[in-house]
Structures are given as structure tokens and as C-alpha cells.
Image (cartoon, rainbow, N blue to C red; front, side, top):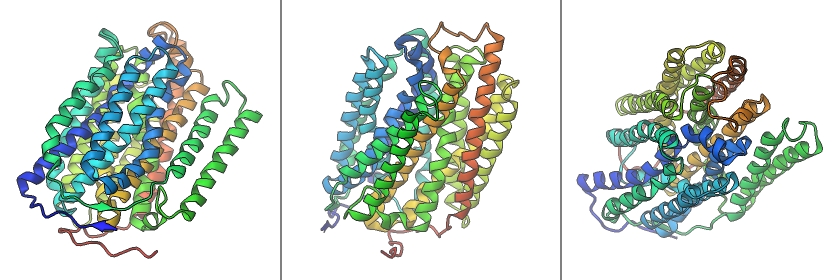
Length: 491
């Protein structure tokens, strides 16, 4: 049963306030995706167990992946505002656990709790914006959205690196508490102006559990394979088979339950299917660069955490520039898909060149290439998000947006685990737990690490090639300029 929107007149000023309120909460999640990476080597050297470093990133995305679609339905059941505020609260609890973590295991657990809250922040903010802004007019608000990501992208790596090198790495988590309080206070009044829409839903907890268990099994196989156990050992083969069985069970489960975690009705929409799959594969490069570029600069180029964080700013800023330019282009172009296809292909070529030259490349060469890659990757984000929301039926707007975020997060989890497995398998991660900057005075070890990163960037190029193919397959539909619903998808 659906409750119609309350008769609240939303003016342009109200709409702007609602968007800003949502983006304040989104800022928390955006900052957390950039502030941690420069501190990873320091965290590994301090807490030990550096082979599990990729889990510091993956644990967050794993739980965020599982709960993101649930947040879409919870927001339909209980309203956008209370669910968004609950997500902020859970995120802050996880931040405290991370800040006081005495070991790598506790830190990973805290990151998992953070993900339970963070999984709702971006998806709910995007849904709230879609509630009050039509697809055609949404490009007018691209400055607000880009501003949030620009602030997080520019400040996060620098602040994270400075905290890790000059103060203490735990501050990258403590800082979330005052920021979260400010976001709640400043957005509370604005979000009260949202039209109230209630829809009855059943929450697919079993589906969420299946996807978490399947992904954990796959991540364990990639973490332990070739290091703790041989790739052909019973343990690794068993984990791979378990992951395959659980993913298969998840697929069958989606077809059997009344309201699955990812509704087949939504996934059968050709636009949503192609856009989400493209973004899934692209996130290996997107999140992989943001996590491992600082590690590369520290281990191979001999930078400290603060310098490595500053170096990452080039990549993050170029991603925002690519998204901003494409968002503005979408607002006035009839054939907007070409920007995403061209950007995706540009990123793939940039990754390929980076893989070829990285063993002997200078810092400036790497910076130039990651700037080009960032612009290319950034061009995909507004096109996929707006295309999915434009193609979804009004009743599925929240679920479709959450489905896109789900596959984006799942791609991030698997991508980080894959790239981390490459570095672990080639022995690079072992150096992190030793003395600070262990490769700076060992040219042979630095050269071996550089060669390992060639494989990392090569893997990113392959997944980006697949992403480009799916982006080319995505149907380009005219963007709606009003609240008219798109044609329904056949059940």
C-alpha cells in the first residue's frame, strides 16, 4: 500500500535546502572513502597483520553493499529523514570502534559497522535529491553535488596523510564525530520539508546474508591463496566453490521471494542492467586507484603519508572535474551517453599506458596519467546515476538507485580484494609491516614493487575495458523534464 505525498509545497528555496541537507550527510561517506587510503601503510606498521590491509577498505564496502538496497526499502517504509539519520548514527558508532581499535581485527570490525551506516548515506542522499528534482533539471544541482565530492576528494587524502604522519592515524575516524553532529544539526530542519511517501515493503535479510557470506568466502580465497595456502589446496578450492554456491543460491533466492534484495523487475530494465553492470566493473579501477595509488607512492616513490595523500588529490580532483563537466553536458545534450563512453575508453587507455610505463615512470608522469584516468572515470558517474533514475518507474526509484549503489559497492569490494591479492601474491604487502618506508633505500625491492603495480594497473585496464563495453550497450533514453513516470517494465 502506498501513501500519497503530503500536501507540502516545495519551493525552489526549499528544494535547494533539501538538496544541501542531503549532501551534508553524503559528505561523511564521501570523506571516508578518501581519508583512509594514505594512512594504510602506517596502520599496517602500527597494528601488524599488513596482509589484511585490503580488508580495512573491503569490510566497509562489504557491509555497505549488503544493506544499501535495504535502506532504499526502509526509506520507503519509514520515510527518508529518520532512516538517513539512523544511518548517520550507525556510521558514527563504527567510527568510534575504529578510532580505539587495538588490533587489525577490531579495526576491520569497526569498518564493517561503519559500512552498515555508510551504505545508506550516499544511496539515500541520491534518492532524496531524485524526490524533489526531475532528471532534466538535476544538472542544475551538479555544482552542489560536485562541491561535496570535491571537498571530500581534496581534503580527505591530505588530512588523512597529515594525521597519519604527524599526529595519529586514529584521528581520521575521530573527525567523523564533529562532522556527523554538524551534518545532523544543519540538515534536520531542511529534511522536514520532504514530501512524505510511504510504501509497504518486506525486507530481504536472507538475501543480504547470502551476498555477504558469498563475498567473504571469495575475499578469503583471494587473501589466503598463494600465501597461506596453495591456490590448488583444498582450503582455497573449497572457498571458491563455497562462494560460487552462495552466489548461485543468492541468484535463485532473488527469483523466489516476494521482495528480493535486488528485484528482477528492476534488473530486467535494460538501462538499469547495463548501467549498473558497467559501473560494477569500472569500480575496480575507481576504488583501486584511490586505495593503492598512495601505497605505490609511499613504497615505490619514497613519499611519506602526507605527501602520498597530497599526490592522491590530483586523481580525486580530476574525477570530480570529469563528473562536473559531464553533468553539465547532460543538461543540454540530447545524446549524453557519448560522454560516458568516451570517458570510459579514455580511462581504459590511460590505465593501459600506466601499466606499461609505471616501473620507470617519474612522479609527474604518473600524476599526469592518473589525472587523465580520473577525468575519464568521473564522466561515467552522473550518466549512470541519472540514466538509472530516469529509466526507473516512480515506485522503484529508491530501489533502483539502491541497486546501482549495491553493484557499485560490490564491484568496489571485489576490486579491492582482487588488487590486494595481486600485491599479496607478489610479496609487496609484506614490506608494509616492517620499518617505515622499507623500500626507500632498497632499489631492488622498489623495482619489484613497481613491477607488481604494473599488474595492478593492468588488471584495472581489463575491467575498465569490460565496463566500456557495457556502457556502449546501454540504451540512451530522452531525459524527462518533469515528474512524468517512464513506461513500466514488463514483469
